[in-house]
Image (tube, rainbow, N blue to C red):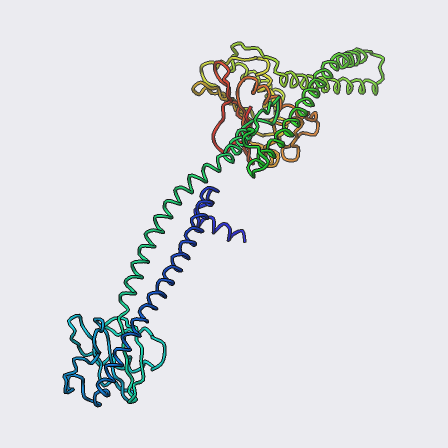
Length: 516
């Protein structure tokens, strides 16, 4: 069934607009009405003209029968009217119309058949038409018959006193010609009427659909808004002109305005909740820094006691390790909260070349079992931004590649300047990121242990590293993309080399682009 719908869509060159369908429907209805009226008019006129012709035929029959009776009888069998003693000049009778056909049928055979002309003379009807004339039944209603070169005739037969059958006929060409002119005139009039009605209908339908177009334009403007995050002021509404509930379009406009009111209320509630949650995270992270620092300090101080039992020393070591991890988590949460709140970063010239070299050197020391590669241009690459945060971006990307790939994986950091942009990429030859996780890698607390190997003794990931990368990149007016397949995963950061642009830079291709 779906295939049938698809085939109809392809055959019909796609769906047509409502305006086109309405105009087409009106045109079809008008064409059907005009066709019915035209056919009815032609049928009625033909019936009227045939009745007139039958009346003339009745008069001609009377004259023909009277003429034959005045002569006493039909000419003897085998003797034509030209061979009669009087020459047969009055065979059809006086005052017959031109092209009148008259015939005498005796014992089923035509003994004489003539057709008159405009000069009053007559000519013989060809013999191949005698069978048609002989087949006319006396006493029946007039019938139309094709007499070959003579044309179509209206024929009627009468039984004479001597038993012969007298057949008289009048040409039907006048009726057919008049009907042809009528059909032609109707066709021209209907064509002109349909053309005018089509143009007028298109203008009228377009005018009547303008309110619906305005409603659609409002919906289109709303659909272009970014409603996913932040404080969204949804002020778009259908104008009051198009919200009259007495009309169908007005009902749609009212329903759309109600929906927009509900969406606006939901967005306000969402933003308030986000703001409250962001403030809570920032406050909680800030308040947790001091007790965590105290726990870590007391654990280190207690661990220096030489009289401490071995078991207690191990416990204090674990307390210090976990407090250090929790401190890092709190710092990350606090950073994200500040970035979400729009806290400004430093805007100073930063040498990215040195940051990349130092970061790769630190990563190689932390992961000696991986193979580390570095590619930087000969000239220093400088951007305007916060050096500490950009260092954190590269550190998190390298740590992500180190943490989620097995030993022996090759990790490559590439720095390049391209036009007015700076491209920083971190690629690895690990197992790749699952397709279902790939669109969510920059979300907070997203983890993918199922596909990217982690050493058993490593500290578990907090799931905030890539979220920080995305947030810091956004704060610098850049964009980040990821492309992953088994054997190759590439994270690409694109930053403006100079001033921070108003719009993010988007990379083309088949990469998943995160707009920031």
